Amino acid sequence: MSHFIPPGKSVPGILLTVLTLLGAGFLLYSLASTEMIPLRFLVPAAIGAAAAAALTFLLTRSPAKKIRFILGILWTVLFLAAAFPAGYLVQDAHKAIRTVTSPKEEVSNLSFYVKTGDAAWSLADAASYTFGILKVQDRDSTDAALSRTADEQGISLAAAEYDGIAQLADALRSGEVGGILLNQAYLGLYEELAGYEEFPGEIRALATESLSHNVGSDASVSETSPESEDPAEALGENTDVITLYISGSDTRETTLPERTRSDVNIIASINPKTHKILLLSTPRDYYVPLSISGGVPDKLTHAGIYGVDVSMDTLEMLYGVDIPYYFRVNFTGFVDIIDALGGIEVQSDYTFDAGGYHFIQGTNQLDGDAALSFCRERYSFAEGDRQRGKNQMAVIRAAIQKAASPAILSEYSSILDSVQNNMETNVPYPLIAGLIREQLESGASWSITTYSVDGTGDTQVPYSMSSSVYVMVPDTATVDHAKELLAEVASAS
Image (tube, rainbow, N blue to C red; front, side, top):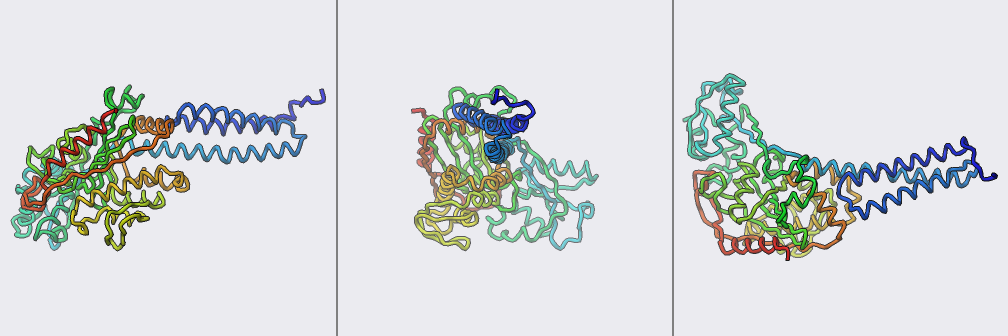
């Protein structure tokens, strides 16, 4: 009877034990809700949680034993100080990935432009003007902008059609029209036209209409659909490979939802069974038919003006492969992500200078701005855009390697902020969770192969323009080899 503990005396121990159970339960719930942790890890974690609660009770059940009771309090405080923050960090990661994979829309910004010295300062001032518009390209968006302006502002503008952006500029410069209506994404194309490089600086916007477009709605897997419950089913019953399009916009100011030229055009083909990854780069100037151009060739980079779906569909046509998913990041986000990782270690094929940075052949430790300059440079190389594509893949490889290292844990919060604010994908969350769970289960290493298709420089008139500019005519032998590499990765052998 001397060991009997009166009920009132054990209350503090019971309360501390309950707190320990709450902290352990919160952490276990957070881990399980991500769907990323293998069961063989969750079971020991649950056993450890039960043991932690038992230890708390054993140490604190008798307040009369002061030393043991104080040790129990210290143990409980330390445990809760670890369990609750860890649980919140796991939930932050869960939320960040959900944000990145949530349904997206793209925005086309169409502006009504006049000359910088024009007397009009609002669309109402220019109500009597005739506005030049593109006859074919982006016509649906142009008509929608005109219609919205008429409906919402009661301003019906006269329009004159032109074959291309050079003709639009000529018409405004000569006074043939008082203004032009143009998708902002097209302004970057003027830098490719001799004699028109300064045109964007000669105009100013009176008003802008922003039009929203759904992205990848047919490729995304709804989280409420049966397919979303099983990552293997999300891929398709007979499909072993995950193929996604990696896109990077060519301006640091553009936010993710805005349609713009795609500077980075890489297909990542991932085989979870063989743990092989192929990174296939296609030069931005590759001269290929776009999925919306009716067979007329254009630069691949221009596909981004019409949406990420058009870029994906165009690459599907080129390589004869299904690309259901995309991963997109802008250059501002690229810098933030690399900095959040604490920099990356990149292998360079050449010694060169770019963007105020000096890169050596071999290993380079780069922060975000330096990595961006490394990715964007092409004039320092005889292979031009071909080498730029190789450098882009080298940076992606380095980022993957850094992200897989324990060193990133110290920058956990900033990495999450950078990821959810600066990148997006339509890869469904269950598929991402399943891949992470399988990787934790197997601990396998991955083999990464990189390849870039080649071509010959030429001067042609692309679909998106009406004047001759530099393009790269595809080398069919390299395209065929790329198809073979894609087939090899897709093989389960």
